[in-house]
Length: 112
Image 1 (cartoon, rainbow, N blue to C red):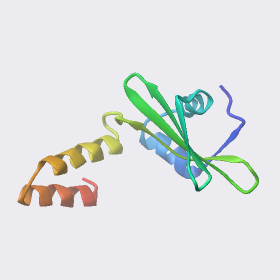
Image 2: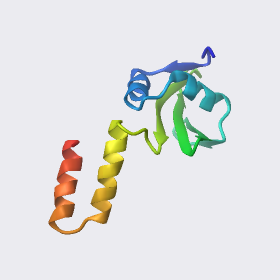
Image 3: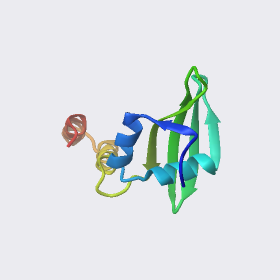
Image 4: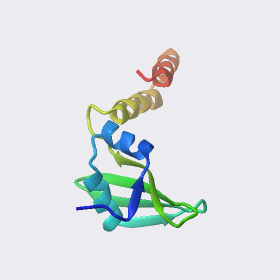
């Protein structure tokens, strides 16, 4: 599937690689979304549910009316990705208390 309607930012391409997602997957989300959310800042959030995951792409129209893919993600994230580790750490922080909570927050902030 060739994408001719959208311009990919470096940020979006970087996030695809980090999140182990393909451009084809995002093109499918943009072509056949389950839901579109229009924001005041000229961005549109495209969502599609597939195999128990929600895939999201953020697209913004520039001054020339071109559709720019700003970012994309999948929730829950794929195991082994940075997003997966961060979500796991977030849950640990939420469930901890006292010194353990502070320790997990520190690890979260430094990205471990």
